[in-house]
Length: 240
Ligand SMILES: NC(=O)c1ccc[n+]([C@@H]2O[C@H](COP(=O)([O-])OP(=O)(O)OC[C@H]3O[C@@H](n4cnc5c(N)ncnc54)[C@H](O)[C@@H]3O)[C@@H](O)[C@H]2O)c1
Figure 1 (cartoon, rainbow, N blue to C red):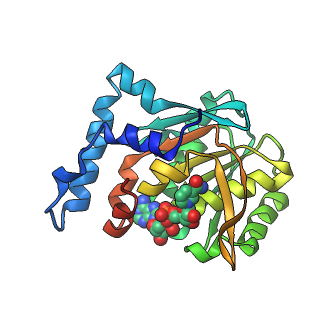
Figure 2 (cartoon, rainbow, N blue to C red):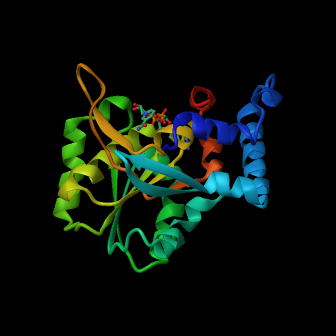
């Protein structure tokens, strides 16, 4: 059986009790995330939880594939090393897809970590907002891949919330009938849900997520420190 939202939520619920953070006002977000990060860090030393948090078996149509899900404060700075160590892909080119807000916050860290490896790095920023999960933006993303000579073994990295993850994942799913991609989710919803199931897609004017594909990321890198900059409204919307 594959990893589902409830599996991931259950895993996360081992590590924090949301009620402990109630009644806090301006520091609520900050305190919660620091505690969440500390607990995740502590838990990495406990073998059984390390296993639970780091490996999920995800099967699609009976075809079993494994996504490695790495969780830890500051992991965005080690993405290059994770790519170099992975046996799932050996890219020459990497396209980082994000939006301006997230890229301004974390793009530099991710790019520096990629630059430490021998990789040709490109970045492409999509506009911010649900309405840009569209055919028009998808076309721009795949055209960028094509114009820059991306090949079957090259890699797309999605840095952002669920919107960026869905659009970047779908671009990777359809370009050359599928190239590898990695999720680096930066919202709570994306960290506990949208980045892990392999569902990618875009919206139609008549409804959300109506065009898409299953395209599982071999690697999901979750850095809870990125939640520190998330508006409280977005953080709360990700609670299970
Ligand atoms: N693929 C799936 O399985 C799946 C599951 C659930 C939801 N989704 C999709 O996810 C999308 C919603 O995702 P979301 O809730 O992450 O919203 P989102 O991606 O729109 O992000 C919310 C806002 O937070 C900003 N942001 C992201 N990370 C930030 C950070 N670390 N600090 C500050 N700001 C940050 C974004 O720029 C955006 O303005 C929807 O399109 C939904 O359909 C997909």
